[in-house]
Image 1 (cartoon, helix red, strand yellow):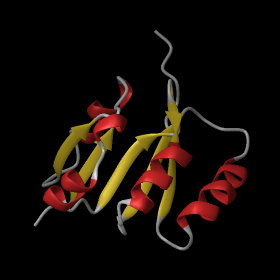
Image 2 (tube, one colour; image 1 turned 120 degrees about the vertical axis):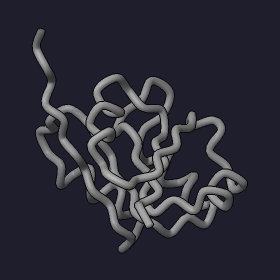
Image 3 (cartoon, one colour; image 1 turned 90 degrees about the vertical axis):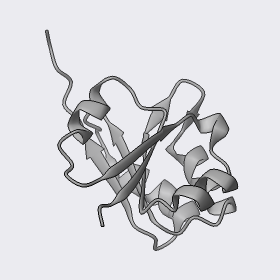
Image 4 (spheres, rainbow, N blue to C red; image 1 turned 180 degrees about the vertical axis):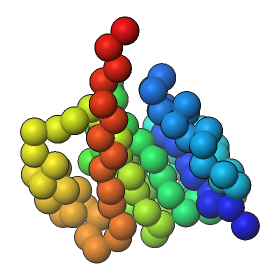
Length: 110
């Protein structure tokens, strides 16, 4: 059984990297449509979201998932950060001891 990954508001760089995840079931949603029905239907093991999106950030995603009773892992992705420890500390206040990871995706220069 592959991993069930829910991707919130993907940006261009990300789905390409996910294509390499063998056996994963990937579902994409918008932040505004992230609700209990979706979580119950999909039962994701991992929720992946950008650290910063135009109208929300990973703290908003963590708060909503917490309210929805989601207990799986949360992963954020972003361009390289000056201080990931600061971000982790902020997320931990909402997310507690549940799994949280930050993937830094290098910017590609064309």
